[in-house]
Amino acid sequence: MVLTLNDVPEKIRPFYVLDVRREQQFNDDGTPVTVPEPFTYTDENGDEQTGTRSVPVFVDVEYVVEAPRGHQKSEAALWVVVRIHRGHRDDIVRQFLAMHQNAERWRFHDAYVAWLGARPVAPEASGQPDDPETPDHEQWMGGVTPEQHALDVAAWEMAEPVPYEAMTWDAWRFANYAALRRVGYESNDQQFEMMHDDVKNGTSTWLDAQSAVKAQYPKAAMVLPL
Image 1 (cartoon, helix red, strand yellow):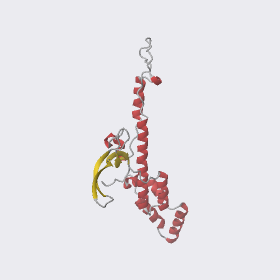
Image 2 (cartoon, helix red, strand yellow):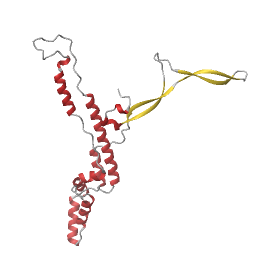
Image 3 (cartoon, rainbow, N blue to C red):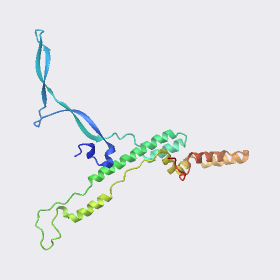
Image 4 (tube, rainbow, N blue to C red):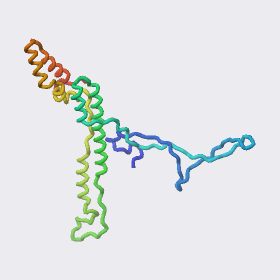
């Protein structure tokens, strides 16, 4: 049972927050917990009177709950935006990248929760008498022996999901420079037309356009600044 944030497994603890709720208190028999409270009132003669009344008790109760999941976008949606803006609106692409990375973080969370729930259950003795001729094979519920359970737990531990590591904007651009360049280049028909016009007019429109895209998305081999 999760009572505090420290009870949440460390790898998914950042996905949870404390939620403080004001709640009415009840006794074990279901009746409200009350305390006496003095009050004043005016009687039918117009005179001020004092009395005592019972008021319910409310206390702050802390719950461990999931943090808001926020906006999430798939990788496919991210690249649709990249193709639409083609390097002209990096601010929008950055927003979609953040939403995609948020989706990947929560994908890890959900996988980790499912993994925790799949931990093999320790076997229990069936209550049947052991076979004296096979002392190494006890009678266990479900037919799973402690030895097999140990193997199942080891396999389960090896399947632990790996946390998602989000990239910075610059690191993502370097890692995807080739795909970003392909999106940034003009279509083949447009490039051929630019080459034709350059040969005809002695200009360098095509080369300038290609160079601009390469400069915007440098090769990943370049060293990122610290």
